[in-house]
Amino acid sequence: MSTINFYAGPAILAKEVLEEAKQGIENFAGMGLSILEISHRSKQFVEVLDEARARVRSLLNLPTEYDVLFLTGGASSQFYMTAMNLLNENDKAGYINTGAWSTKAIKEAKLFGTIDEVASSKDKNFSYVPKGYEIDPSYRYLHFTSNNTIYGTQFKSLPTTDVRLIADMSSDIFSRPIDVRRYDIIYAGAQKNLGPSGTTLVIVKKDILNKVNRQIPSMLNYQTHIDKGSSFNTPPVYAIYVSLLSLRWLENNGGIQGLQKRNEEKAALLYNEIDRNPLFEGTAAVEDRSLMNVCFLPKNEAHTSVFIEKAAQAGCVGIGGHRSVGGFRASIYNAMPKAGVQALVDVMQEFEKENA
Ligand SMILES: *Cc1c(COP(=O)(O)O)cnc(C)c1O
Image 1: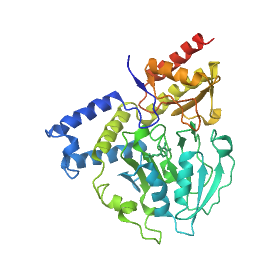
Image 2: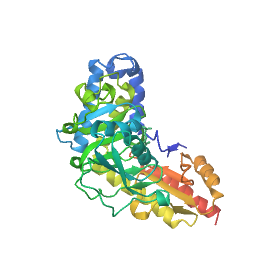
Image 3: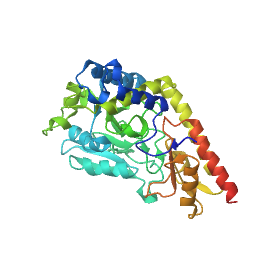
Image 4: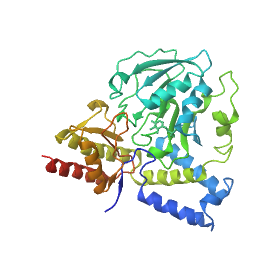
């Protein structure tokens, strides 16, 4: 029996990616050395970084005015870097609060400008994506979290505004096509949908920088990393390498269009079972259901630990819900095969028979 990884992050990587990652540890690019022990200035690693950037560009069809960075400090560092690089103290920005990560982004941004929480779904434990709110056209930008990893909700369309957008796409980057031109910055911690932990993909529109009055430490200034091609300091070599392997895998598996189709099929399979099976219920508003993190509860609370145990015995691990939602969360990122989701559905159906 194989183990199927439903953890929310760090999360599943494709088998082929792991095989190649292993090979790179032993003998990278025929150098007779491990990728873990080579210089980040070596020709071989510079090629990794160049190819990773180029693949992000082509997958997203990035216009030339955008740059691609691989940074450290997690998506969490982007909560303050975005505001620090873009907002003067008197500038206003709007934030949509759809959960714990948005809340953290708001807290950090408040250190650098005037932050309006334009909408929030906190009143219902973030189980939906707010709609029908006003956006002040004078905002420097509007920040939102495209997929809410903890609560299993996802924006299905962009907020209606001409204000420039910044999005935290940590848990749904490369899972569906996006209209890049609407954004000034897109960021994503690699460990959900792209690669291992240790690097954060940041896509920046170059002409938005260098417009604030404050002094920005070099490491926190996007311009530094653009100028130095993500190698101002030692980059996370291995995390970037494995992310590159994953980018190649994305391309070989239908690209973003192909992935989207597969992600929709996987999510439909699981949500259909949640809606059909009398022992379970979904937690997110149906129209906002995430294709990446599927959150559901047992109708009988006593079933929580029993079902998690049963799923684990069938090889489905990592389905315990986040403590703020409870129940179950199945993370079915890009690298999750449809057969993995089917295995979980099979467990749910068996559980129904046993508990009828
Ligand atoms: C996991 C996650 C983060 C935090 O990422 P770190 O890399 O741990 O800082 C931020 N935003 C979202 C949407 C996430 O899922």
